[in-house]
Length: 166
Image (tube, rainbow, N blue to C red):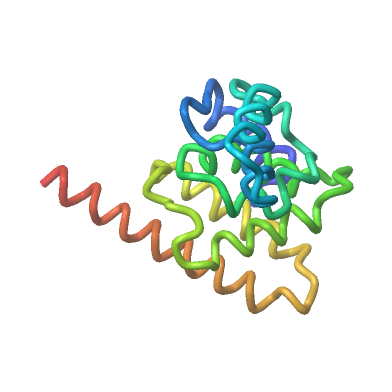
């Protein structure tokens, strides 16, 4: 299996040039979580990162509950930074990032994996398999569910892609 450094390079290649577009941003999601007004949400959106998800790597806010308030575009834009945060050995936010990934990949309807390509889901699955090696015992069951969910989505998407080719 590849090393964490190799996976980080693969994430950077797979999501290179990814821009957010109209999706929910990180600070904006935090304002939503805090029941902020439309004005506060707009102000947060102006301060937020729109173009380079790599600037969000190792952000505590990124790996916390803010992901719960993102739409598909927001999740797609922010997920690579969360994956890299969990992969980096020097990250001070590994536990927060990994727990967020487990939460979102085991919670029904949390991450619309159809917003990702088959190649991207395969990469996410491989990363979660690698991170499982660092999983504390109390999270092993959740990690297994996460991997099972990713595998089933991957199989479904591969079948759908095959059917569309036939």
